Image 1 (cartoon, one colour):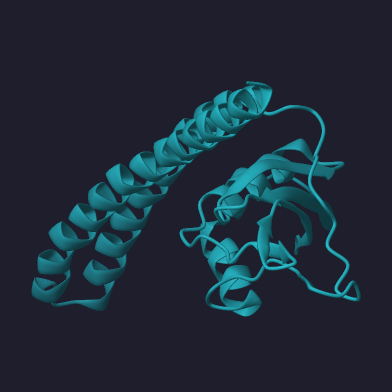
Image 2 (cartoon, helix red, strand yellow):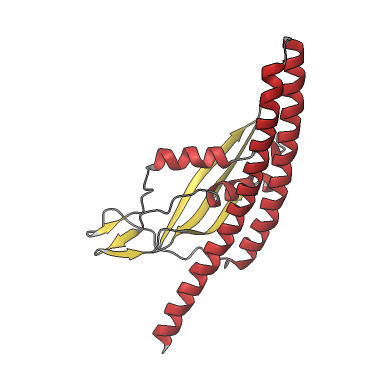
Length: 199
């Protein structure tokens, strides 16, 4: 009975965490549509503008509207992130896969680590961070047996940077190829260092 309960609990938690990440994706989709609508509305005005001064003025207004939407989206992301983080346990329990152990493989992103880094970079909203010089953090997360990312937690001295780092990982789209041991999928602990330089 205990085995069935833990199996049910595992599926229930995976469903819960996938629903939470889905909340972030819904927010992203909502604002992506609004941003695209602004781009489309101003595209006509920009093609009709005759002077460079007029083009610059229209572009400035468009960028201001888009930036306001990005800050709104970020506020909604942070609310959703607070709900997600409240559901996580404080420990990052997962196996650390040693590649030297026979019959063990580490998790792999389906499109490679460079793609994952670029996607994180694209999801990162640096405008929401105040700081000087250089800020750093390390983002810890678990790749579940089904390849989904859970238990994302950033550790660093700048809390705004930490929250944006957590969001940029949670907003990635692809499921990972999970770690394996003796051919069986296994939960694995991962971490990624992030840094941002202020000019």
